[in-house]
Image (cartoon, rainbow, N blue to C red; front, side, top):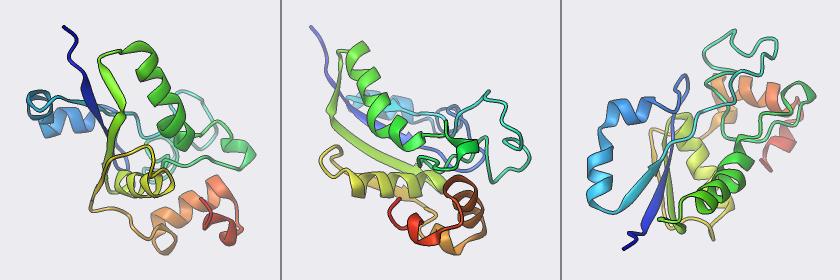
Length: 162
């Protein structure tokens, strides 16, 4: 008999990898006993060897901000599309025991910002959202300004639609 699990996407914060939450939280057992599959994607693309991608902790590798970059240099940084479109399709195509129509999204810090913005733009895809210490107003903090300027360009009005 196939056990169908609902999905909880966890978006980690600045400097994290796909392993941080799994290693540090111990949430696997609690999720398993409740019929929840934890899906913990990485925080950015890796291995693209873009100049400057690993020069600082708050931008580039480990700091993708779960958005689709619009600047040519970062054109392959499409974390929003990965989380919203590609990853759910990969899961549903390859893991029949997962019900991606019963999904929630959560995150911490940069991942909390990602969870909130992704949820609010996709109310039909997620049952709930939780954000722990999110970067709730990234355009008014150093991390957000740096990331948005580099990924999205200097036109701050365009940031509002992201």
